Image: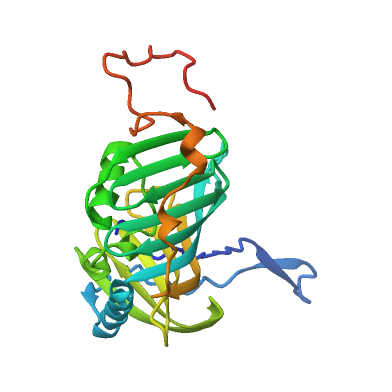
Length: 291
């Protein structure tokens, strides 16, 4: 879990200072006399009190209940819609959206089909191999797999820079991932506007990320997560919306493999941003970087 411990919105303070005079008529002199405006009331220069860090028990109980519900599920289907911001040429954020349909079977099977504002991708883990397939480009990367979903998440990130924003929810112990390093957690209240159900809103943060979560009051399933990262000077927001939850339902045996990639062009399972061994960095000032 990564973000900063400040709220997503900032209060907008509008100070209106009126400089001028008001005229009245003096019957004795017969001309207008300027009357100075009354001075504005003095404003306190005291700074607001510092934020009191701490972990409210009610907030932690809600996070724990959600984590336990997810960890106990042997199979899981859900849809995750990710909305993330990226700076435009003017600096103002532009929002992009991806949709991932996720199927999981513990401890060693996972399928993630992703569409949206970017290349379509398909990811399969069947307990023995990892397959990353790009259907539009007809490219496929296949690699041997470790023996658990937790280990696969680390492997694909370290070796190929693949990261799923919902990773903390599908590992074997979601609470451990969410609670690690927490410095702040508090209960906000209830909402009936997210996910078509009543949710409990909680906020929690560590030294990297601030997250607001909407979690089903009855079923304890996440419906929305919003995050802002402390190191992001622009305060760009990342949002995950969850729907179509199905837990502990039968999953087809062939759900975690694909035949569509059999005719695709094989490519190495590696970080696409990594330079080939022996390659030289681009010359400073060259036009190798596009806009």
